[in-house]
Amino acid sequence: MSATWLPCGTYHESYAQDHAWWQTTFIKGKMILLFITVFIVIPAVADDYWLSVCNQIGYTILGALGVQLLIGYCGQITLGHAAFIAVGAYTSTLLILEFPWPQFMLNMGLAYPISILIAAVVAGIWSVLFGLPSAKVKGFYLILTTMAAQFITVDFILTQYVSQIGGRGQAFSLPPGTIKIGPWSIENDIQVYFMMLVLVVLCVAAMANLMRTRVGRAWVAIRDNDISAEVMGINVVLYKLLAFFVAGFIGGIAGAFWISNLAAISTEHFTWFLSLWLVGVILIGGVGSLHGAIFGSIFMVMVMEILQLAIMPLADTFPKLLMDFLFIKEAAFGLAICAFMIFEPNGLAYRWWQIKNYFNLWPFSY
Amino acid sequence: MARTEPVQDNEILLELKDIEMTFGKVTALAGVNLKIRKGEIHSVIGPNGAGKTVMMNCINGLYRPQKGSIYFKGEKINHLNPHQRSRLGISRTFQKVEVFGGMTVLDNIRLGRHIHMKSGIVSGAWYLGKSFREEIEHRRFIEEEIIDLLEIEQIRHKPVGMLPYGLQKRVELGRALALEPELLILDEPLAGLNLEEVEDMARFILDINEEERWKVTCLLVEHDMGVVMDLSHRVFVLNFGNMIMDGTPEEVQNNPEVIKAYLGEEDLYATRR
Image (tube, rainbow over all chains, first blue to last red; front, side, top):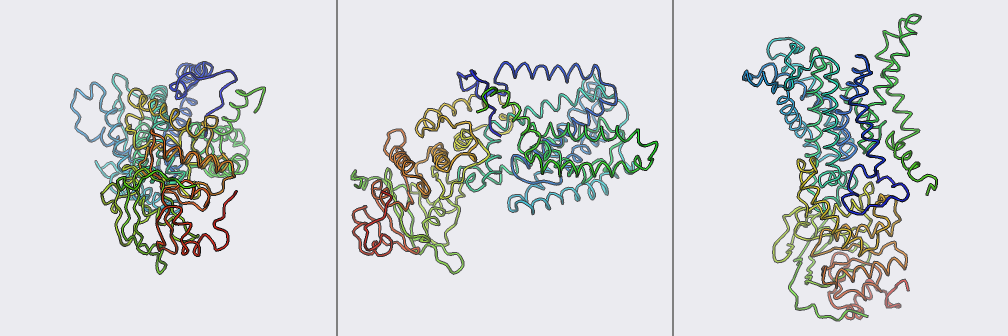
């Protein structure tokens, strides 16, 4: 998506101004308001239920960022992203539970932050492994190889072997107090919420910066035209694998974050439907835009919650509705994607861009 | 009017020796020899299907010839990938514009600076500091050297996919120039342009070839004989993968074999005048 039109009478005087994210005072004010809202207002007014919805949104954003990078920016269609989230979650869990941390590190609350970083790197490398076929195959064929990542990782390795480590059976549960960052023990929804905010802000900022520098441009070039990208000096295979690495890295962060919100970590949380769900999120939000990943996550999670709230009162008369909610949810997901493909194929982010331009150019629309 | 400045004594920049390229039983190139000297505009002409584009693809590595060798500045480059060749200073434009449609004009040209930039994922994700300075530095180069030269200031923030064809061609030239190449392969830069755009493009090609700042050696594939004969120092004629001749524009125009194969018997050459 191209740059937004500047409001009438606004001119840049240096290249640095033209490179900035927030180019006018109005946008800066707007963003500060947004930060005040998410950091102060929401935690103050929301109850535990809505905070957990926000955490769900944050988790979806972190997952969708990686999918957006692969599909939206680099053109490598992936249907196995849940595998890399799972690798992140399991690596982090196993490190916390099984690694002999020195006592002072546990006291200082370093175990979990370090495990997040390691989980991210492991998930990145795991993702590169399954990204290797992208050197040779494109499009639909790549979808199948990434689906292989899902089934090999989650259904085979994690379920059959990793889950058996420590003899716990099917699920790992983290004892209270093990998830600790510095002096803070992450136990209730509000702490998870703040951790989610910090991670989402960091990851979105890193992605936005990458997209305006050399590496990000190389990814978009590969998406738009891989032959001329190669002629322009881009090592296409290397950059594709780099995209897989960064996507896996962010997926690993998402997984390692999510264990703080789960009572027990099992492979049921990382099914193939989650991979599909994340692709749906970016289709609805808008392919090839960071706003898209965020808007799509908010929209999808909120629609599902509202659907649930709408069904609750009906459940007394039609008890079967509650029983079938999972299927209703899937049907709504499919319906939402159909509707967006027909009525707004460019997603919510494009609508947002149009609205911004409308107000920036008002009253002279061209 | 052909160019008369002597470039015959300049050093050889690119040399093709006995290049053979076949696709199944079709011979696209049958032992082609070509020497391009520094500072010249060397045109390749020939009827459709003569193997001109195949030859260009061999030079920048998209195809690997079965036989023969390619030397760039005296070094054999047969084994190098396209992206490695671009680092040596070979850049090109395509017959059908191959721009990055979803990126803005500025981003397309910035992408041409890829090999001159250094920031990786870590410094890029952090952005402040090294990456930022690098972006600003290259932005200055792009604005002052390329956008100014090609006169595309007013469209710099537009997505290239939405621009008309003539401007896309110009952006593609800008992208190829941003690489600061020593050898620029122009594969039909004038195809599909109107008369005014042809004149502009011809002037840009002359500018980048002659100006002290650029001094780019050009390898030009083109069907517009008027432009080819006016711009080129030397013309190379290809027919069904065989070289017919390689000489100055006058020699080519008067060669009976070339006239028979390509230029046509009656009219000396067709042009859009």
